[in-house]
Amino acid sequence: MTQEKIDRINFLARKSREEGLTEAEALEQKNLRAEYVAAFRKSLENTLDNTVIQRPDGTRERVTKKNNKPKGVQ
Image (cartoon, rainbow, N blue to C red; front, side, top):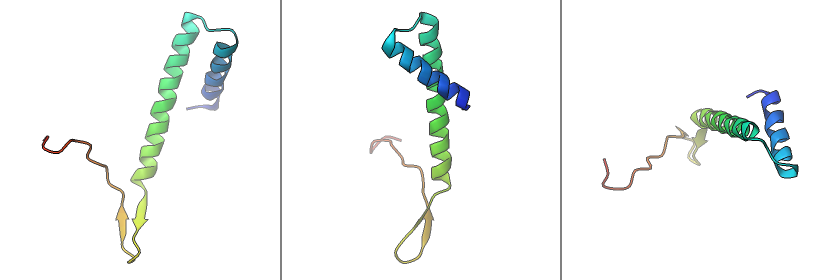
């Protein structure tokens, strides 16, 4: 995400608080926010993929994805 897009998100947020947004601006804000959240999640996922935990005994272990399925569901 470019700095210009982040600045536009901030501008639209200020404008919505001060005077309101047109329908086109509200749609643009929604799309920009969705793009920002997707980029943030991807960045966080990449960070976690490269994270290693070092245990007190000196062993190193990569962080793994958590299985969020309830017990008994396959």
